[in-house]
Image: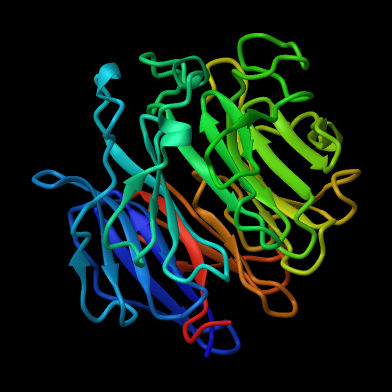
Length: 373
């Protein structure tokens, strides 16, 4: 079976499926047409459970789930919601991010929300509980800059990462706020931001207040982390607790600003980014109107441009969840645009083919492997 791409958009979700050669693609009918779908994710532990992080006019923020690869759907019987923290007057505005739990914890999922809440399910996404160690942490108001929303689309919790070696070891990202780490299953948290700059205060020694856009940990080398930040591209190698700005090696006329970052599934030195214009008023479109994906194969020491087949002029925007990779050889790389296009590369980002167009604004794009690992 070829790759399956789960597309979350401002007006519903779609499934784009390729053949084994990744040359011919088909697009499904829409799922929950008209609903905002921030994230669509397949559970890699069973290969059949799909979750959608959605927001609807009449239901508000919620999660929809399917146990049969999208043939039937139901809403979570207890969606994510703040409880025990009403002293702050918090009300969940969106379920923004979904992450399956550890391989040894079937049924466990994590969800990030806006404002910056963290939620956990132990039954495959049907019922959700707040992670009080984060949501009611004594420093939450300071870390989350509550009640201010420091980013244009609201303050969001994203990039929930579960260490494949230890289900109690978690990371998360907050826009704005920074990267945070827990080593006790979410009961307590610590900032992990030294070395990365804040958008407002260019001080690499600030404990928190940064604006990570997307954080990734390599699946085979979990101590290697990358992030695409508001202020550049960074790498960290644990147990070192300091980020190194590897985006400074990008061409200066392009810069190292953007939203998504994706990692090679087998090579911890290889990562892809989609640069966007971060100058002046932050246009958030392809620099100079010339879209391209850049790849590093030496952990950020150098970067190579890949734009074969892409339009010579296009003012693309690619959101933080709207880029993904498959596990084929060579690796397939994919991105979706806010203008409703899905682009695919069969040669690790050197050349590109448009495989879907005229969809609503794309919020997320995730590769899925039906049938499990």
